[in-house]
Length: 582
Image (cartoon, helix red, strand yellow):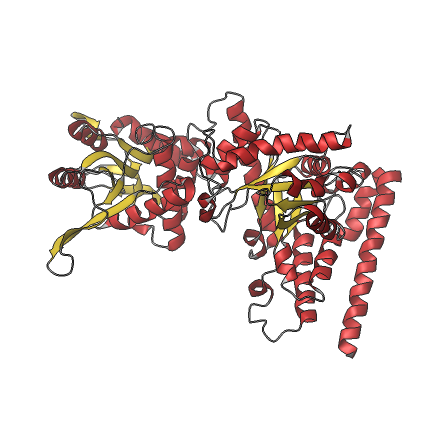
């Protein structure tokens, strides 16, 4: 049709313009570096000349993927890998069933090109997912993928997410298909061994790179990758070690160069696996850590587990967290900055410095989102005790799916960080018990977070206020607690009455209460004549540990470093702690 012809001519013109600009930029970079700023202002409409746009000609001619990646990370100061996943639901929110292949492909290209233009300043790498392009249609799908790859600035590496895994001529054909369309590296399944990886990183593709699946972000990965071997290591730890030995094989096949190297794919949703994979692979192997954001992975936990001591060695891929944002460029910049903040903490810890804020990352994040949800407030509040407190905490305001999700993760992080509730790897309880009513939802979300974030699968039980006289009857619901080790969960301890009643009930049914986990410990004296807090009294009287996500000392440390709250708030909290704190 005439319209299609016009669209094609317009697209061709845009493509020619892009190629022309790339050529002009390359010439200027080589022969007139000082002119680069002016050229960027003219064609990119950016204010000033960001250091992340000043790519040297050597970056465009890097012979190896990992060398190119290192150079890009250094120039952009970023570990953010931007995913290019043109989900039809995002491309055509109102439906795509009646769209032609050409329409879907054109829209997918526009979707990806818009993301590239918005995030190019902040991306260390781009990761298009081949499946979404192949699904566009047999005629134009792969061509659209190639078109997207060629629209990415030459100095930014392209990691094609294909997860191939075969041997011989089939693997070689897969490699040709990936690299002929412009990819710098690929993702691979390593389960068929070195001969399934070799065709992608040796011979004519010795300058390419690959990330092999090690411990992926889906819960089902435990079915195979977390199995224990006779050697005492898990399957994923063995794969992590193989990344180094296979890289040596690749180097040996070429005889001289130190590249290519292999990286690993390890999900950010499992910090413990990420830590163990890093330990097995060593500090120099690159890790691609998907799962931050939409899949629930915690950025700080992932950074602490997967980055090396230099604060590098790990790419954080994010797709929907950027593409679904109202402003993808701002979202990418924010992610880049959050990643860099996490890097700083890792470097400081590796240097033996004390935590900058006297507070763990998960505690700071808990206080931040408690404030954002209105659960934690600053002001003047008269408590039941008659004291006037400068802050108030109401866990009942964690009243949305997102808030409960984050709350569960914070509880889980506190449990796994406690030497009183774990032995460094395994928890010392079998069931979490949530007393009615608040404890019911708390116990559920924390059990789910322990399983999702740490692979810890424990039972969940709760009680009713009144016994049920039909059905299964009774007051207890959920996992059996008889002869089991039980962790009791609550939001706060005011007087400790509910915890004592739970302890008495659990003892009566033959359960062993091993501890209590709460959200916030006010850490203040019960009265001026009583030097212990309600939490300390429970721990003393029941002879069990009480662990909290955060307490008054952490709140004070948080305020000392936060630029968002004035000195008056810090002074009031400090004064209150000096008068009533334990």
